[in-house]
Image 1 (spheres, rainbow, N blue to C red):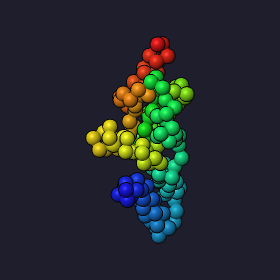
Image 2 (image 1 turned 135 degrees about the horizontal axis):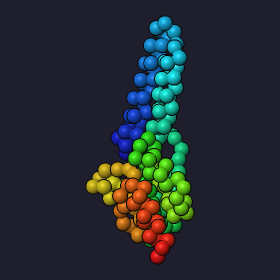
Image 3 (image 1 turned 45 degrees about the horizontal axis):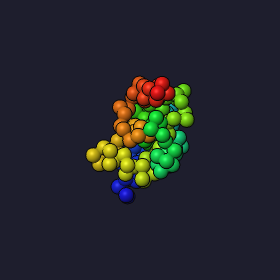
Image 4 (image 1 turned 120 degrees about the horizontal axis):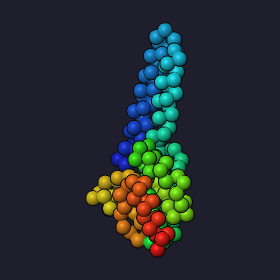
Length: 152
């Protein structure tokens, strides 16, 4: 449990340390330059994006499963995951009523469910249909499932 919490923060802390070093270097050097200011802003934004504190779509695991029909999709995701971000961006305009987003960092039951489906690893995104079938983590696979469900 503690190990999981520490692992969530490692990327954020690493980026923030680099940002602190860049800021210190700018202060100790010839003074802050525009390039250093931009680099610092980018690193701080990246630190926030990777942070477990970042908000995002989230439905608790038990509610997502209870509210999903066989035609629906549950996407298990976590902040900072570029594959999750890519999937979210690709599905942004898709049928929102049929996709439930579960943040595995906010829901221990969801993290355990994902680990059980991935040989012990909390791999994201993990895409499960309401019927319990696993889908490939691609926009095309999710859209195809939703389109086939609507056609039935």
